[in-house]
Image (tube, rainbow, N blue to C red; front, top):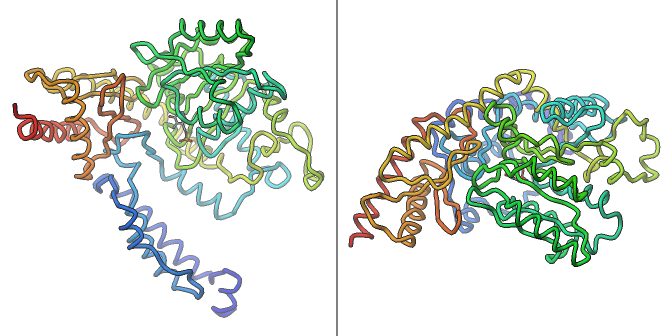
Length: 484
Ligand SMILES: *Cc1c(COP(=O)(O)O)cnc(C)c1O
């Protein structure tokens, strides 16, 4: 076929495909080799991006390599490097090369991972890897089930739709749901998406350690019952995003049992810590949940997008999401042959299980365990360094690889307002330097710097360098703006 004919079928010649593919692999490998020495922070305004990227709809072809080079030069560098060892904020995405390549296979073969009949191999790998996760979290493989989603938000949404059907049936007008003020915003989003009113949500305060207050939780449930409402679900956090705190899972499980409530655990951030000794202790009781969200694209080192919902009984999912339209009649299959489109919201789904399978098999579970253990200890070592310093105050201790601290020199009598301001400015300066991704969060009204240390390539030196840089900024700010 000549070039024009190929173009009209959106094709490339074999030679061109190879050249193009190898060029992309070269870019990715070079990024993996050099990313640690790049600057992690990208900052650009809408105006700057408009200036760089706005163009008319391209009606005629452009040379493939010219397009690729443009993207590699102008688009890709305009992104925060979440895999960078100094990417400390939000939840980093350390990723791994095997999974990146596995995703390339899934896309290259455009595997439809919706139904058994279309891709028995993909469905079986999802069942297999789900069984591994069910085992890891003590959920029992026999009845348990689950589904891979785009992320934790979708997993939480899938869980709440399931909980609502099982606990409330069709009428949820009086149903009430409970979660702490430290629970992730995606839960509130999901609750809104599925049509609950604000008045059906109870945000329970947390104690001094950022755990949900059991007393206040029990009071709220009792009060709602007295008012004729129907408490139906508690969402506990297993690793809050802010502080890594795990709610008292065993106690909440007990309340759920007594009150006949659905027990959902959002372990999107912290769930993976079950693979580490010290994490396992903190997560005791996680196996008692009815449903559990974990997020492989966080601490299981998978590239985006990959979330996961586990449930105690796989029938709960199929009972909630199964529709039987006539056009899927011929591919229904039997009970054991799972159609994952029956277990969640998406019909057409990408083959997410593949990257989890290939990376876990290639590196081995022990490598994941070691990496997670390392991350937890790294945060603890960071805490030790900060505690020994007269300039830093630890605001929440190292918990599941998260630590919060603030610049607050003991020899200066700064007001709370000044401390807030100075820490805000330290973060702004370090972001502006682009040397480290380090933003603030707010804990009990205090502006603090937060580090989430789930990258196995982050070393104590990376952390020390960043703290030193922050300290220099802090002292400069003190000398200039707070000279009193
Ligand atoms: C990140 C996070 C989520 C949301 O997950 P996404 O993958 O970003 O959709 C939910 N809950 C917790 C605790 C999280 O840390």
